[in-house]
Length: 217
Image (cartoon, rainbow, N blue to C red; front, side, top):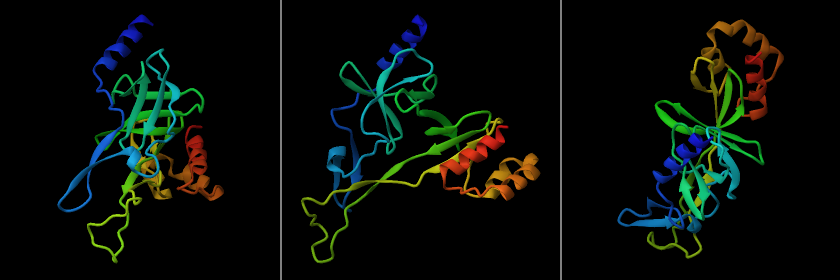
């Protein structure tokens, strides 16, 4: 336990501290760049805007955390400061106490990303949630450089993308029956029978949970 605490404290010291408000750079016109704060944008980039108690499964310490779906970062609070959790081992699995939700770090197409673990087992269902920024629309009746004071950019949630991770550590975004059959060429007959009996909607989490439960039998 002492060693785990030491590891966590070392990691905390190497992680950059957030400012009071997260800022990022975006181009608003062809000639001018502006820095906007999250408070200047409608909506929220967070899966849940409130910090909730959570912990990395490697460590004993529980801290308030939240997931930023725009930046793909886990933020946490410690001693009144907000930090970004180191994106890598041993902090690859975050469990939230209240919701029982688990977020895992997986490397897909050579890119480490956070996913919601929707179904666990030797085969896993991973849900990728993300958001983007939509700039305010400008009317044609006003000069292109004019923006109403109340006009703001907005955070827009992207449609979730579901991945299956196999026991062989293969990943594939699942959008059709063919994607599943390609991932399990040795189970084509069993899967054909399963799909004949079950109407699976590939954009519905509950349907894909049912599919992964079958694969884990």
